[in-house]
Image (spheres, one colour):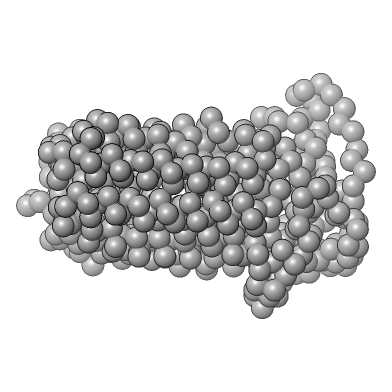
Length: 494
């Protein structure tokens, strides 16, 4: 890290950022940072759909479909968990901007190299490295977005951005049908990966203009740089919107540090905020189980129980992906107006109850492929907003110095538990070919989601429309009263 002067500073930077009106500058942040989730959705969907093509004769790779969807998916998940933890720690240490450029660069390189796979080991290696980059993105991007977006818009922006994963999933589901059907066996699947790399380059070009978080800057001894950054943004907005921005009154005194140790971060999360740590685990594990209950073996369920042709399952997947995106889009604003606890617990419990109803209808043989997909679409319309709110929650209820690592830790735990245990359990239940066993998979996913909603109802934090420093005082803050917030803000023991 470069040499910086550290001391004690009193600053209004957080309050100045939070009171900014929405502007083209904020749209640049959303496009530059948020669109990366489209790549994640694209990646996961493509791999799920190319298993048959890459394992076919003439594909150029000696690999089986089971290896692609099994070990290949596991390597991607393992990479995502490792990347989230490793890059999350680096993001808190070296800054948001450096790491969200590095992680996207890693994703681009690994995806491009996956496209030229010539053997199974090469494919598995670069699936792991692709996951490593995407996992790092989750920590770097969510922390940067929450620190740059005004508090009154933070909830809806974060939730909609995380929901764009499903735009990528829908695009991947539809794009792979003609690419795999019309191009030669050894070309189509490579082009699918190439699409992800091209989109990543476009995002990288926009991302170059996204600044470092001013909150991170002033805590790490770069308060002058933070002030200049916010000065420039304010001047641009005043010129664009022809207004004079009032100066906020709220200040905070910070004892600057170059680095903050891992032990300090861990102690903060486990000792100062144990209830919020339990909340984060419950939300991430709950949504991971529900999504695995529905999306894992999605094509198998359609082909086994409803005799849908294998080549047509992508169209059904595109429909539920659309439902997943529309949920955050329409419900997202309510997280800032109605409130976090009501909306998070409501979407978790509501989607769980809806999935229980779907399981009952499915078990009684009352659904067709079309009506089953319609039921899934309704369930995921509600669940997607809740799942996105899990990332929002852990990114705003812990001190700024621990934010990226907190996101990474809960993402890794949720992905490891729900993304490994879930598929192993649900695969065994679906593979039996018995309707009752598959219905049990739905019930398990629904129950875990409902548990997450109940935990939110008791341990959730009323964080809507409040500054991040009011929700969780920075570890480096010297005056305890300077960040006292509004009602519902929990003390450091929560």
